[in-house]
Amino acid sequence: MLEVVRIPVLSDNYVWLLHDPKSQETVVIDPAVAEPVLKAAAARGWTIGQIWNTHWHGDHVGGNAAIKAATGCIITGPAAEAEKIATLDRLVGEGDSVRIGDHVATVMAVPAHTAGHIAYHLADDRMAFVGDTLFAMGCGRLFEGTAAQMFANLQRLADLPEDTAVYCAHEYTLSNGRFALTVEPDNAALVERVAAVEALRARDEATVPTTIGLERATNIFMRARDVAQLAERRAAKDAA
Ligand code: ZN
Ligand code: FE
Image: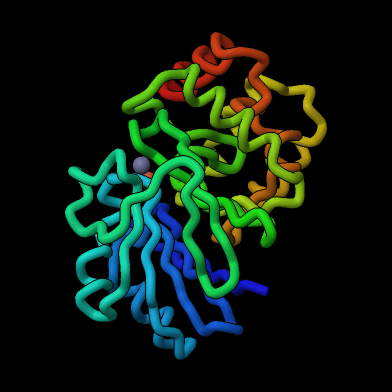
């Protein structure tokens, strides 16, 4: 079994530490910053051997250089954004695989938030590290891609097993949930989830990871019937 540690940094980012007790390997996904990540690993006696980046934004790669300087780790990231992430050692794209011990993560190309955005799917472990593509009850903004691309990404993620844990990179859940209620006010699963999220956030607790099953039931972007409806919902959320 892989262990996962959530490290809250900056205003609403989550950095994920993934550890394999068998091989003693440790991977960091999207280190926005270095210091809290190095501390979290050291506190557990773990040595960071790899970084996996999902896209080039500073709040996902900002800690790369300092973590590499401290640990000598190997940094993997999207080949399509290599010119924007100076610290990459290993370039990957759709269908490539990366490993932590015996555990395999398959790279999924999910362009839209950024043009080369990727996700890491550990099918056997029922885990997906999705960066800024899929959020709890939300999806990433379309900075470098189209609604059609995001629609395809979300449909593809929706097809993963429903017990797949989804590790997203931000705590945006409450804002997403409140907006979702304006779109699907009669969705009982959504009403119930937003109430639960309100309570968690009132206690300053995290609401992620989520699961593919929960998102299928409550994510109005994943539930959009077509590209036009997703585009309309994304535009409305951007303006909210
Ligand atoms: Zn981003
Ligand atoms: Fe981000």
